[in-house]
Length: 106
Image (cartoon, rainbow, N blue to C red; front, side):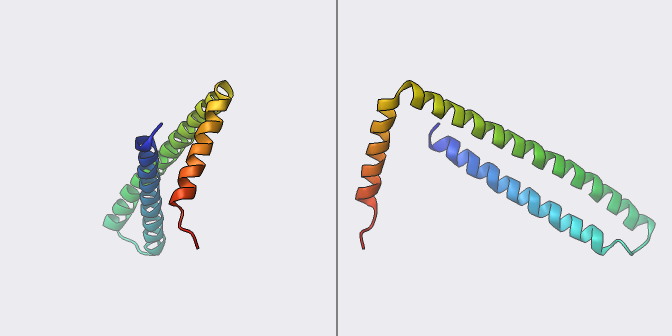
């Protein structure tokens, strides 16, 4: 679980944010055209609603997948720490020392 997984999670979060923004913009567009009539507008509105429904389903699926990945990583980390407590303490100390050395002093 290295840098690639963290970068992957950031990519997923970015995609989720973009889909959420798209859905919100499209719903606002649907609300703003609700009073207008016309066959072409009604057809476009129905297609947009279908696409929004699919986007929302995708958003929820990705979000569930990200949550499941987080749970798995958390469980693996917990198991590792329980199986190797002294190694985990050593890693934590090493990380703390590195952060302490790299942190700017005021």
